[in-house]
Amino acid sequence: MDLLTKTFIVIFILLVFAVTAGIVIAKNRKIKTHQEEIHIQIIQESLFDRLINLKKQRDEGVLTQKEYEDMKNKCLGII
Image 1 (cartoon, helix red, strand yellow):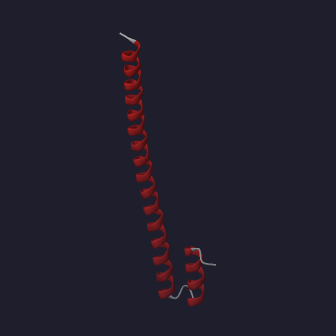
Image 2 (image 1 turned 135 degrees about the vertical axis):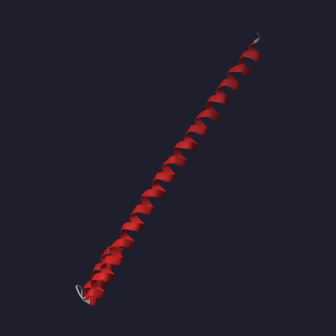
Image 3 (image 1 turned 90 degrees about the vertical axis):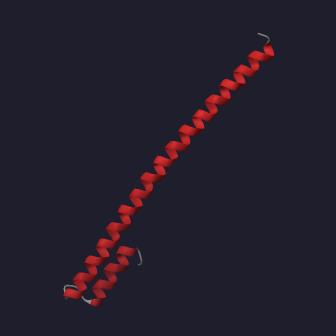
Protein backbone atom coordinates (compact mmCIF):
# COMPACT_ATOMS: atom_id res chain seq x y z
CA MET A 1 0.00 0.00 0.00
CA ASP A 2 1.23 3.44 -0.77
CA LEU A 3 1.29 6.34 1.69
CA LEU A 4 -1.89 7.93 0.34
CA THR A 5 -3.94 4.75 0.89
CA LYS A 6 -2.58 4.35 4.43
CA THR A 7 -3.45 7.99 5.15
CA PHE A 8 -7.03 7.51 3.94
CA ILE A 9 -7.40 4.37 6.06
CA VAL A 10 -6.15 6.18 9.16
CA ILE A 11 -8.47 9.14 8.49
CA PHE A 12 -11.41 6.76 7.97
CA ILE A 13 -10.68 4.95 11.26
CA LEU A 14 -10.42 8.27 13.11
CA LEU A 15 -13.69 9.40 11.56
CA VAL A 16 -15.42 6.19 12.69
CA PHE A 17 -14.11 6.71 16.25
CA ALA A 18 -15.26 10.34 16.23
CA VAL A 19 -18.76 9.41 15.08
CA THR A 20 -18.96 6.60 17.65
CA ALA A 21 -17.83 8.96 20.42
CA GLY A 22 -20.42 11.51 19.30
CA ILE A 23 -23.18 8.91 19.48
CA VAL A 24 -22.10 7.82 22.96
CA ILE A 25 -21.98 11.43 24.17
CA ALA A 26 -25.43 12.12 22.71
CA LYS A 27 -26.89 9.04 24.43
CA ASN A 28 -25.33 10.01 27.76
CA ARG A 29 -26.70 13.54 27.40
CA LYS A 30 -30.17 12.15 26.64
CA ILE A 31 -30.04 9.91 29.73
CA LYS A 32 -28.89 12.83 31.88
CA THR A 33 -31.61 15.07 30.48
CA HIS A 34 -34.27 12.43 31.19
CA GLN A 35 -32.98 12.03 34.76
CA GLU A 36 -33.08 15.80 35.22
CA GLU A 37 -36.67 15.90 33.92
CA ILE A 38 -37.67 13.20 36.42
CA HIS A 39 -35.96 15.11 39.23
CA ILE A 40 -37.76 18.35 38.29
CA GLN A 41 -41.08 16.50 38.14
CA ILE A 42 -40.51 15.08 41.64
CA ILE A 43 -39.70 18.55 42.97
CA GLN A 44 -42.82 20.01 41.34
CA GLU A 45 -45.02 17.25 42.77
CA SER A 46 -43.51 17.77 46.22
CA LEU A 47 -44.11 21.52 46.04
CA PHE A 48 -47.68 20.96 44.82
CA ASP A 49 -48.31 18.54 47.72
CA ARG A 50 -46.94 21.05 50.23
CA LEU A 51 -49.16 23.82 48.86
CA ILE A 52 -52.22 21.56 48.95
CA ASN A 53 -51.46 20.64 52.58
CA LEU A 54 -51.09 24.31 53.49
CA LYS A 55 -54.45 25.09 51.87
CA LYS A 56 -56.08 22.20 53.78
CA GLN A 57 -54.63 23.47 57.05
CA ARG A 58 -55.94 26.96 56.29
CA ASP A 59 -59.38 25.62 55.38
CA GLU A 60 -59.48 23.54 58.58
CA GLY A 61 -58.54 26.56 60.68
CA VAL A 62 -55.14 25.24 61.72
CA LEU A 63 -53.45 28.19 59.99
CA THR A 64 -54.57 31.79 59.83
CA GLN A 65 -54.71 33.52 56.45
CA LYS A 66 -51.51 35.43 57.32
CA GLU A 67 -49.67 32.24 58.34
CA TYR A 68 -50.90 30.55 55.18
CA GLU A 69 -49.69 33.40 52.96
CA ASP A 70 -46.31 33.55 54.73
CA MET A 71 -45.73 29.79 54.45
CA LYS A 72 -46.97 29.70 50.84
CA ASN A 73 -44.58 32.51 49.90
CA LYS A 74 -41.75 30.72 51.69
CA CYS A 75 -42.47 27.52 49.73
CA LEU A 76 -42.55 29.45 46.47
CA GLY A 77 -39.36 31.33 47.32
CA ILE A 78 -41.09 34.70 47.60
CA ILE A 79 -39.72 36.67 50.52
